[in-house]
Image 1 (cartoon, rainbow, N blue to C red):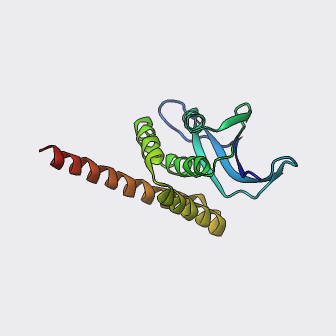
Image 2 (cartoon, rainbow, N blue to C red):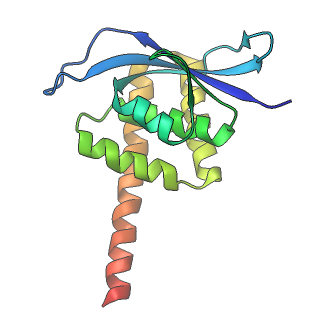
Length: 160
């Protein structure tokens, strides 16, 4: 039996951004039985920016099941990438940061990806508080940006 995962996008109050970018609430859920449409409890809920989030999840392989509302995949790591991307995206207000984030999330090794996603799920399950999720997402962004800068610095040393 294959595992399936679902991302539901629901309307939510909008975040003020300079370019009139819409937000939706992304709800991440496992599908327990696809044939019977038995859906598990939410593992994470975060506000994401549309259409950039949809573009990212389509690029990594999610299929649109219901136009602009429902996306599914049977790949666990795609699901984790979407989860980490969505959570960290929710704290970033600049589109160029979203592009950097997408590249970083795609390059994450499975063990790191699993760890970050499990931390996000645990915070959501324990507190169900968007402020605590955003706090963790900010720490993830800071760590990944620091790692990116270290890699740039190391490449610069190798070139000299």
